[in-house]
Length: 54
Image (spheres, rainbow, N blue to C red):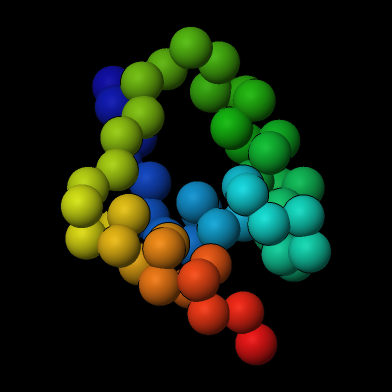
């Protein structure tokens, strides 16, 4: 099985101040060596959000 990660999960994984950061890391660690993927639209969303901090 491959998990298709969305913008929210990716942001939670990379931003220590995100409210779901710890939960996202726990989940990501729990899936072990399971495959994961993104898509160009999701990657663009991450860049847009990370590139425009409020």
